[in-house]
Amino acid sequence: MRERRSLPDSELDIMLAVWHSRGAATAPAILEALEKPLTASALHSYLKRLEEKGFLRCEKAGRVNRYTALMSEEDYRRQAGGMVLEKLYEGSLKTFAAALWDGGRLTRAEVAELRDYLDELEGGGE
Image (tube, rainbow, N blue to C red):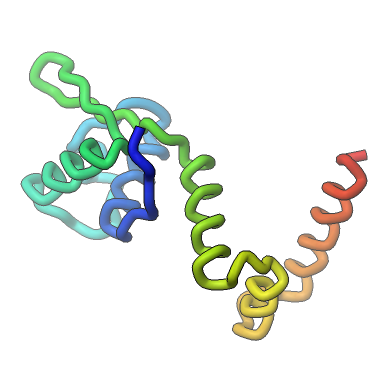
């Protein structure tokens, strides 16, 4: 399978609609789920591109196309998060967390939640 890269926002929005459909999604269902309106023609172009990139599979069911994700949302998050960490923060989780804190994106409660999570990981979930 081809190496997958991060998706542009427009394609990611479509993948989110497919992932949240919890199965095969039709074009009308995807259009309805999108926050930004798209023409049917534009949607079909994006869907075709996502198929070519290996993110979606299209199956005909009578006169309807059903689109199924070939990568889970969790796997994409893991991959995209790792790419951002490597590219922007040279692989340093500490630098990333510092950027969030300095940027005002983390609250004290979120820091405490992260600390608890790390303690849980370190303790093996005991």
